[in-house]
Amino acid sequence: MAYLIAVLGGDGIGPEVTAQARRVLEVVAEVGGYDFTFEEGLVGGIAIDRTGTALPEETLALCQRADAILFGAVGGPKWDDPTATVRPEQGLLGLRKGLGLFANLRPVKLNPTLINASTIKPEVLAGTDLVVVRELTGGIYFGERGRRDNGQTAYDTMIYSTYEIERVLRVAFDLARQRRKKVTSVDKANVLECSRLWRETALRIAREYPDVAFENLLVDACAMHLIRRPASFDVIVTENMFGDILTDEASMLAGSMGMLPSASLAEGRRGLYEPIHGSAPDIAGQGIANPIGAILSAALLLRYSLGLEAEARAVEGAVDAVLAEGARTRDIAEPGAEVVDTATMGTLVADRVAQALTQ
Ligand code: NAD
Image 1: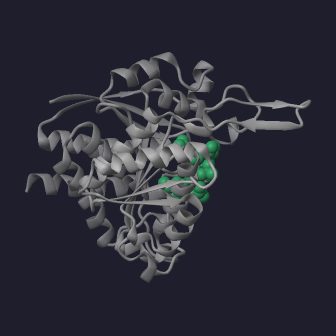
Image 2: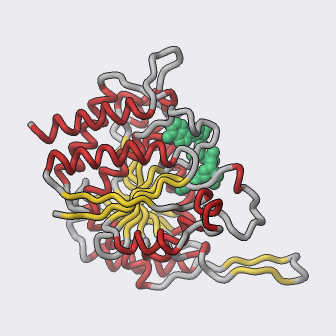
Image 3: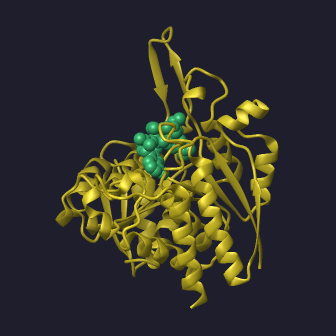
């Protein structure tokens, strides 16, 4: 099968970690006999510098042609002025909109070898394996906003349609069916009208999935339970702003920013895959970034956009094996321990993937 994969490294460590994820995909293609074509595109600060816009038309067109997008990170101190009209994150927002990426999936699985890297007690964390599904294109981030009273009053509007709620809930329920069959829908139905519509819709969709256990949680309670009983969750589904906050909270369960992948899915198979971390300007250009979040994002790309489940598992298994053998980048190493650089970590994982797929 032939697939086109757009590679948008972006800024800072983005290109460094994306290069390792691409290498792993190249190994999958080579060993599995797949025809992957990689095409690079500009996005973020580097695109602003070269073209004056964070999402050049050619990049959007490339992504619209591609089966999947491997994304690094955008932003950095050079483009940090919050009042600038052209900003790096417009690249990502433009892609979400232009490609209709409405569901953001963030798996948080605790690697047992790194249980001490988290600030949460090991006995609370043990067994944590959850996915937060965040609605990505609606809600308060996209509603009407403005100022009145001579700028002394500001407003933002949260707005959701049944259609938007239903489609993201279906992603969550379908995902739960492939996992431990539990969905927690998170809202603020005691206060917000959007949340009441969300809850009504969730209850209705839940009836279509009688094999999936279902619960509603208020967002404040969810924030608490995430650090009190993280292992009890399977799939958490929520609206855009609650998801923004809860995904960051959930990512801290795993200890390091460098380890976690994400997928942003459109209707159909197209998706954008990126590590959850940013461009890490403090370590950019040194070759020391952890590429595992990017590599695990490539595994999600194989699973959700290309339907290559065995290959996705081979990549995830390779990461586990390499970590179990003790390889560590600086961010996940115990003080004083030996560390490997970005490229070495990539090579170790790629070699393991090749081994696993040729067995
Ligand atoms: P960050 O995730 O870039 O970095 C936070 C801390 O984690 C830093 O100390 C960094 O060195 C470390 N870190 C992150 N990824 C790492 C990795 N792979 N390996 C080792 N250490 C890693 O967040 P920030 O510092 O708040 O933001 C920096 C820039 O990135 C800002 O311009 C921000 O806007 C942007 N950003 C972009 C995205 C995105 O492109 N999706 C997401 C978040 C932040």
